[in-house]
Each structure stands twice: as C-alpha cells, then as structure tokens.
Image 1 (spheres, rainbow, N blue to C red):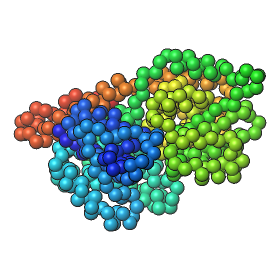
Image 2 (image 1 turned 90 degrees about the vertical axis):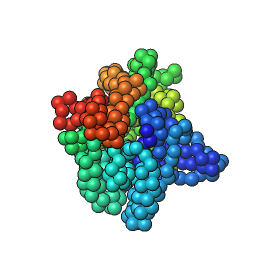
Image 3 (image 1 turned 135 degrees about the vertical axis):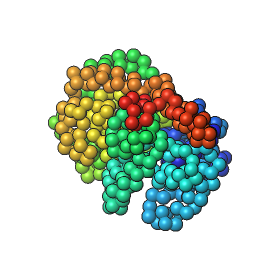
Image 4 (image 1 turned 120 degrees about the vertical axis):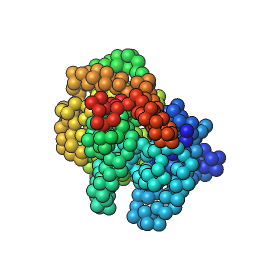
Length: 427
C-alpha cells in the first residue's frame, strides 16, 4: 500500500539524490509508517545544496521505499497566486497513483493534499501537531496576524471533515481542532525517547546537591532552552528579557541556547539588555545522545514558547530528570504543573518563576523525580504500540474503501473507536 505524506517541512538535498532533515524527520520516522504501509512519498519543501555542503547537525531522511516530491512554498501570498496551480497538479499526479494521504497539519502543502485527495476520492488522515492560530499570530509579522483567523477557520474545516485523525496532544489540539463525531480519533506524541536508565535520576539528584566547585566558589546555575533561532515562536526574546530582570542579586547563572539559525539578532538583543555575557549559543547537535549529554549539563530547562504541539525538547529534558519551567502554549500544560507555567510572552512571570527556582534544591529534587516519571510515558515501545494500532486501523479503512459493501462493513474500523463512542481511541 502506497501513501503520500504531506507537510511544509524543508528538506535539504544534493546531487547524490539524498535528502536530509534538520533533525526532526530522519528516516526512522518513515519506518513508523513503513511498518504498516509498503511505500511512502513525502510531499514537502526542499532546498538544494552543493555536493560538498556541510550536513553537520542534519540527519539522513532518505532510505528504502521512501520517495520525495519537492514543492514550492505556499506560505506567502505571491506564491499562493503563482505556484498553487503547479502544486495542485504535482500532488494530483502522485496522489492519483497512491492509495491514501497522510497530511501533517497545520501546513499549506498538507491542506492542498487533503483537497486533492477529496477531489480524487482517496482516503486520508490528518496528523495534528501544532496550532495554526498560535503559529501565525505569534510569528512576529502583521501579515501573520492578519492571516491567523483565516488559517484557524480553514484548518478547523479541513480537520472536521477528516475520516481519521491522530493528535500529538491528549486534549489541547483535540479541543481546538475536533474531528466530526463519525471520525476515528487517536492521540500519540510524535516524540519518542529511549527508556531512561534509573542512573539518570540518581545523577541528577546528585548534581542538585553539588553546587560547589573544588575551590569553594559557586558553580553558575545553568539554564537551557532548545529552539530554532529563526522567528520568535520559541520565546527566545521572552527568555532574554526575563533573565535581564533577575541578572543582579541572585545566585550566578547562565542561559544556554541550542538551535539552528543565526544568533546575531539575539546576541544584539542580549547586549541591549545588558546580559550578553550570560548567554551562550551552541548551534545544533545531532539528535540523541549528544542532545541528552547537553541536557545533563543543565540545572533547569525552560520552554517559553508561543506555539507548541507537545514539545520534543521538553519531554527530552524531563527524561533527563531536569526541572522544567515553561509557557502555557499548546500541550505544555499536559506535561508541567500549572504553578510552574507562564503566559506566552510574559517575561515578568517567567522572571518570577526563575527567581523562585534558581538555587531551590528542594523544588528541583521534587521536579526531577516527577518529570523523570512522567517522561516514561513517551518511551519508544509504548508509543510504537499506540501508533501502530492507529495506522493499522487506517490501513484497514483504506483497504475497505476499494472493497464491496459487504467486505467494507466486515472490515469496519478494527481496533479503534470513533468520536461518537464512549471509548475514544486515546493512544
């Protein structure tokens, strides 16, 4: 069975024909689908690089039974007018030869793929990973704010009509973008972590109690944040303004930021706020052990985002038993207690939370244990089972669409519940 997966993610490719991702979509992600389907065509955006381009920090996305269809961006008004016809034609050609579509939302390419699938009568499922409103309203431009209400309405309309849908949150995205009562719904984070060893918690608790260097001076308290430096959705400005509020009179601390993009604008802001010497930008690291090692060197993780689904970096920090302070964006309140959350963009609230947390050993130990336990719900084995159940149900639905009415009724929606059932398929 052949499925088309559609989203606005930008992949990097060169003359060798290999495609790379900035860490979020390696080949291992496609293997999740290939455990149920035979072939995946990825409809996406792309950026061609030279054969000798440095791919450090990027992961290989190419692999057996995965093809890529590179499409132009539809994220600006000019391209919507001039490129949409080409995108629709390209998607029509590939979807006509496929059995089904999986549209990761919100995204312009995903939205177009849904429209084409409906025109061709092809089965489709949505994957809801973030909020269209949050992303545009907080992107930082007047154009984004103007488009946000329309994007919210369009995305809700597309999702409501979907026969199948899986969400990365347990409640937030489901409430904002519900399926119709007849739709088949699941929830499963797209974040998965290795089973954390108990020694991780033991070492974290030991770190919390060890705040002195051998020469007797205080070790600077290390605060960390992971997020792209492009745009403002990860709340880097909020973080910088918050630490500027508490830069004097507290235990010595540092802010460490890991993420892709140029740090120049943020370094300039830090300089204007008088905290440039407190902030270090680390660029990107390969996903996995390198990121975990970086997290192990922190005392506190913050996620002051304006937009999230269920943030990977927060869950990874929790899996390293790291205390966390975050915003109320997206599904974050499903992970962190309300008393340690702040309103997106409210640097005063974040500053107060940081002031209460820095050096608070009792709170840090309590949070280390709670976060470590919570993160175990996102281990690969547990999520693989939940995800497999949903996609097997979708596969059966796709197969039934081409069968006789009797066979279709017999296939039903095996192993999953629709929205109008008491036992909604909550993965």
